[in-house]
Image (tube, rainbow, N blue to C red; front, side):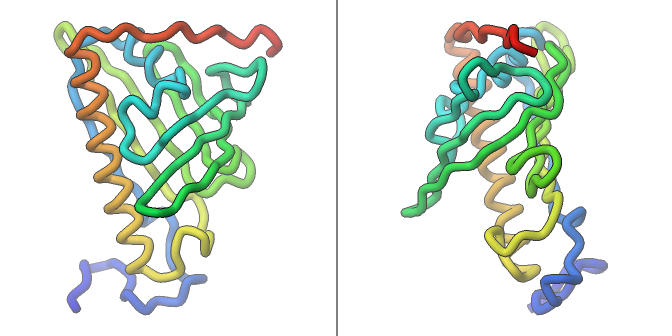
Length: 181
């Protein structure tokens, strides 16, 4: 088995793996202005329309797309289902939206979305990064490489589905801002 130069060997001890090595970014152009795309992405309840893995997500009662807000996400991969708790860390309408699975202080994975105008549409950038090692995600270089590849494929599918959904003329649902901040 060959390895990538500079990458840890598949048998590298879990404790010595570098979480920063497990990240990616994917981009897509969508036919809508940044404000509309932000509205769609920040409405976490809509993610199941596009994601092949997220089956449902809901902000906590009274919460919405603002830094500090929490939401629960329900996911499926093959025959496994699980629920995550995530905290919004960035909510900059028309520019960026980000959250950390597990919360800003103890999170294990960060997701970031940015929106840049391009022509009549938007370049949507979706980034994923492992923030810390956790055996629930894998314990070897090979496990974490497979996770990163799987999540990158999922992000590509999500972006393609989002672009298609917008192209088909669907309208976003209204996100009610949190007034209890």
